[in-house]
Length: 321
Length: 241
Image (cartoon, rainbow over all chains, first blue to last red; front, side):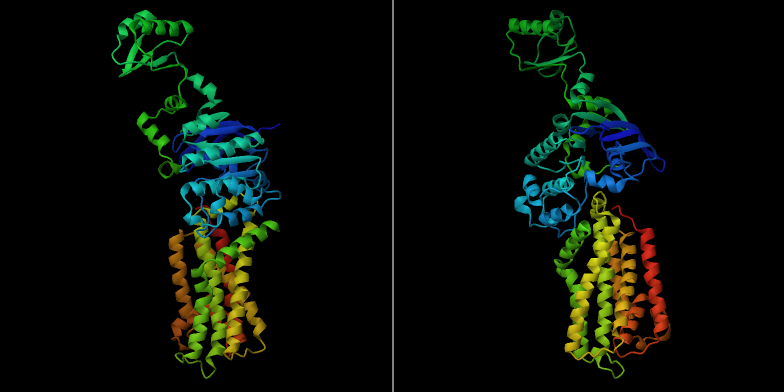
């Protein structure tokens, strides 16, 4: 079976600016593909090219084998789209707009059931302008799914959504995957990427800097290191000697051993600490968080990246591209 | 057809639930009709005021719905990304436009019936040429919708709101919809006659009212606007916010 989404050597230029420069990836049915990258990396441009909103300056994009521009009408029948920052008329009611959009598709979901699923049953008769940011996001997700899409493009689906809403959105996405839908999701949220993705594509400055299943990406940077926490002020020179690898105290009570976490090393560490009567607070070997990989690959300063990952909606929401 | 009906129903439902839109599209023409036909402020060359004002306010109603309501609503839809959102659904631009036209048409039928009923109750007696007035209303709708959409498709929502409302007020005054055109000084009259408002109201007060303007030039001007304005809108309209 063909891939749900095939992007090959995609180039998008805006005047002199090359926003996307040779991006290639595929997304499969029944899988969640996360496009991850800092602001202005070209995520939204890439996804909007798949949706048919933008023309490629070069390269090729196919969604379920369809050209998003020339086969756009056929594509709209199998595609669900959740855009960043797209509105509805102020007076529009969730129940009404879901019924309206249901009318566009031959075999839609039941609007009332879907409203219930996204947790907005009690808000069905409110108006768009009175919904919270999170409620608007959930309604947008429902609108993207009303037509039972085979491919769902979700641009920052949980931006501005509270924790409960995030969990709800994650469970909906998991259901889509179970139903065989290809989900292509862009996000800044590393936790979201790590918990949802079957496949991650990291884009920076218009290029793919890494791609693969999350576990593989983490291994990429598994690095030769063990970190542990214990009381501050251990004798790192003595410890280095005992372990046969350099040990440094990177901050008070947080130690880094520049060696891979072999059973022998861990055993030796445990023995030494036991002799010294030091209680181990935590121990991590070779399993970095996605944040570390992301930061290293995209080469951002950690302060800027933390800001981008932590600011949920509006500030980080609008892509420069 | 199902998609068109869904969009039409949604548009109509939204239009009817906005009091400020109803005030402009129904309240203002009706108020002018009742007030000026009962209070003798502007004279209408010996004819009963209601005979002039009923078709004139119908022209105003057509302009307010097809230019102001349509244009301002579409402008906000574009700026807020509603049009972009619809762009990824199977609705398509053709059916979106058809639903807009059907919504405008439905509201106009309601307005004309209401103004006609009130006019008749106040003594309006239309001449037998009145069906020609309906043809003029269709052309006028095309002309004003073209102007409204041309502005909505190029200006940001708030600039569009200001521009469309200003244009409405200007055309209301120089369009022969409240003040008969023969009261204007020559140069103003010449400019006013080249605009779609005066040609529409002129055709309506002639075919449905007491005036006897030469219809030929009015039809030409209105038909030209009905072709040119939508063509400009189609060329310049931007769907993105």
